[in-house]
Amino acid sequence: MASRASLVVERGRVRLDTACLVYDKTNPLTLLSRGFALVRGVDGEIISSAQQARDALKLDLAFADGHVIAAVESH
Image (tube, rainbow, N blue to C red; front, top):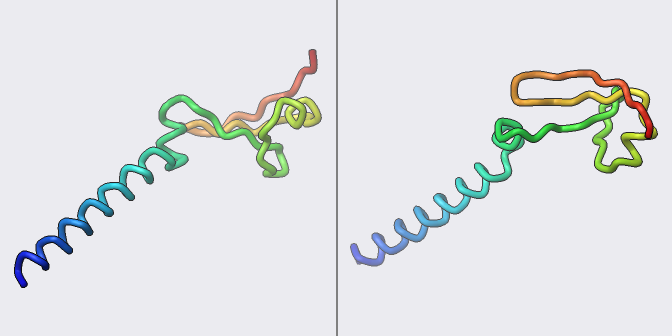
């Protein structure tokens, strides 16, 4: 009985470790700290393409240490 309980606990620990790893890899704050930015329009809408960015007048760029509002220039 004790060995079965140990097996259940170990499986739970492995699942928890895996969940923590996935969370760390996908946590937005972790991604921002790696140099990525979250781009939104000034209305808060997520910008996910160059065309959306070109259509916007201004962008809100979220970095790990704060936000910057940027004006859009089309090329």
